[in-house]
Length: 115
Image (cartoon, rainbow, N blue to C red; front, side, top):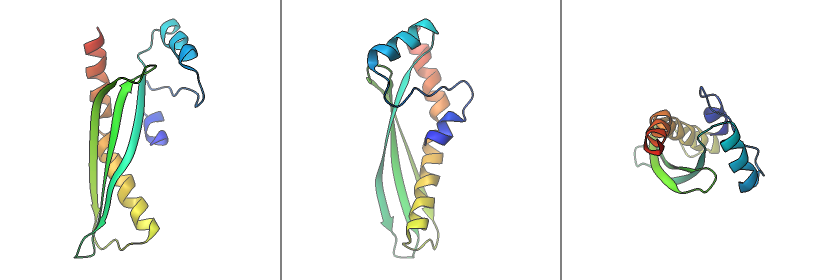
């Protein structure tokens, strides 16, 4: 997810261990809009036909502060994927791709709400 998000236009990632006070200072001084992303894999299931289905959720919150603004979800099915770890990772990655496709619109909606 970090690779996908950091590749988006206009996105800068905060250092992993940045304090809330430091984050607030950077956001304010550079006139940025901050977001916090939290994600989880909500389901991985093997279908009777051999397909593998993965579902994920991504919570978009304020940064700093982490007040929830939007929840994005994504799902993907890998036909004949089997149950290998590689197949599971492919299905999860495809599910995140689907969820994160809507992230720019969610961030724009958050900016509009803040103005």
